[in-house]
Length: 279
Image (cartoon, rainbow, N blue to C red; front, side, top):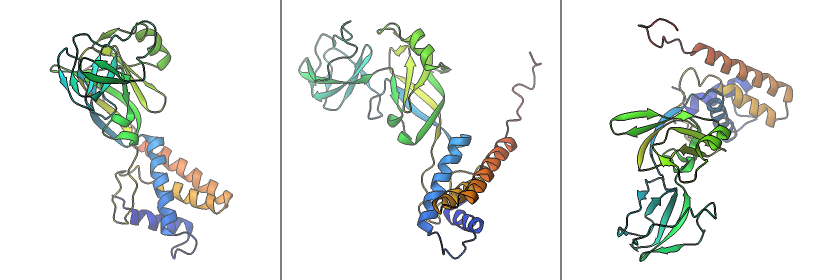
């Protein structure tokens, strides 16, 4: 497994700068970490299953269903219908649920309002799972699959492009039930639909960015053969900074060739079902 030390040595060999006459270790470390992130973006090699819930509070904890007469504390999260609320003043929830959606405004008011002796404030829709609320947080790069836990079953949700998802599954504001589909909106939000009718455990198959290497002994989480292109992209960045654009382009082309070679060498060669005949 590669370490920052082995990366530094390899990049210096490519740059013919073994004695660090032109680039400091700090500069090359920055380029190496940029290269590692670029490799993950280009190959999707770092995947992880993140466990979370829906409806999900912005803090990353599961919101609990509103219940008349329930005792709530400050910073608790509750959901009712299609919205999630944060408790700003603790107390006992009233006998009447929050009156939203009301058919007038798309979301509840931004100001906190009373519910029983407690005070609650709208924070987000119950259909949203922000990347920042996931265990990997902002390091989450892409969402590949979403699986819902329902009783003893794992139910993979269907992926739908946002435009289709929005038109087919978000027509009715208060359409609630067991989620059947998901979509990714923008760079940092997952939407699921229908809006959950209860709290569900969810497993998210995601691509995550690598943690920066800092110490020379730090071991990279990117393993063979995906770590092979890293040094070429780091050398490209170093030469580009030096304004040696011709050499920088050569290293970039070598990076692209190595990424293509890696993807070809690990191309899935699995038989989906060895006991069945092709359709």
